[in-house]
Image 1 (cartoon, rainbow, N blue to C red):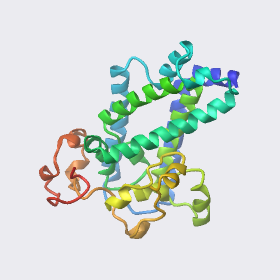
Image 2: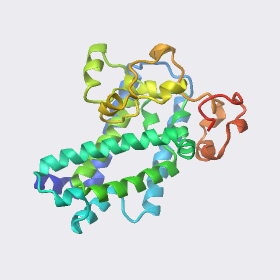
Image 3: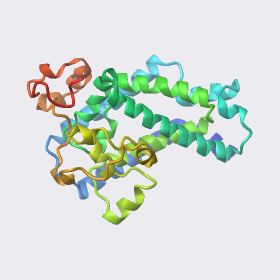
Length: 285
């Protein structure tokens, strides 16, 4: 395992780019050939904004933080910080445990983003997309990305996760986010089977419903077990996948698709949105 870990870490940037570009290309092609739902908005405009957010998010992390998650894990290993650096288990056991614990922590973070009003202001931009496709998996506010990385830095340091485990987890998280936000549908039998080991597009699409009880379900990005374990799992949307409405009850005006509006959206109240119904909807804290 050590040789494989060295190769992956030595080529970290190439590994990340390869999986990102490869997965995004496959999902975009799949959606073009067999979309699960018709899109209601301009795909070009949405994709331009969502891809621009990836660039802004990445630049912010590089400028704001001296190290990212893999670097923090390397520093923790060098100084023998964290739980796993003081446990004498096999490398594969510690590797798999780190992946599972990190995934559980991201599930918990996602729940907090919905339950804490200040965090919801940041996270709701992700849910304000009026369509659901693989580009939605890229749509996160820069401040949410920064907070998420700070949480991850503390987590990998306290856990003592191996740098290669952190790299693999981050690649898995990004890859599965592109997959489970895909505007695609798997055969019903395959979807039911995959849901025991992986969050599928149909499972995660429920989370993007305009109905708040459905929005507050299916929080998993990668592993689906936590939703079942903690009672946040919802099998299907009440209106069905073709009948459900995507997005929030607020920020439904087309002008809010623009990048500049996405960046300031956390600082807007629903009352400042001309399309909002006062006292109603997912934007009200």
